[in-house]
Image 1 (tube, rainbow, N blue to C red):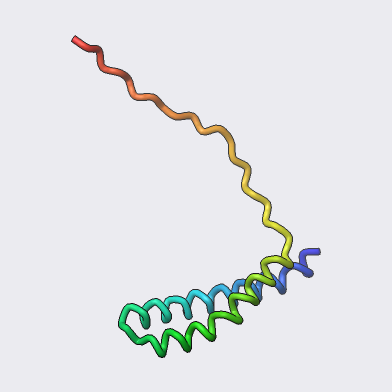
Image 2 (tube, rainbow, N blue to C red):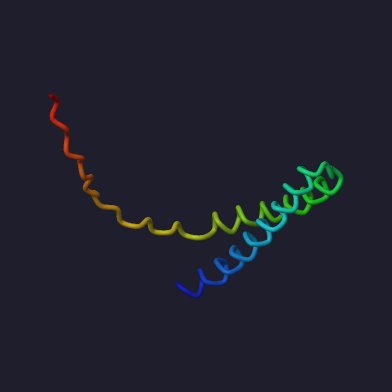
Length: 81
């Protein structure tokens, strides 16, 4: 089971890394008004985003960490005079 999930998780990590890099370049291109470059990057981003979604859908959901009740300390109140 672990080996069945390891390869898709590794590919997902690679795709997410590449997406982050391309999205950063896209944001920089948009902020510097290089719209042609941003459009070209958008064409590269779209298939990677589709692959990321397909990989994420094929993997089992990650177990959520257990959360417990966290005590909140109340501040001592001042006495009114």
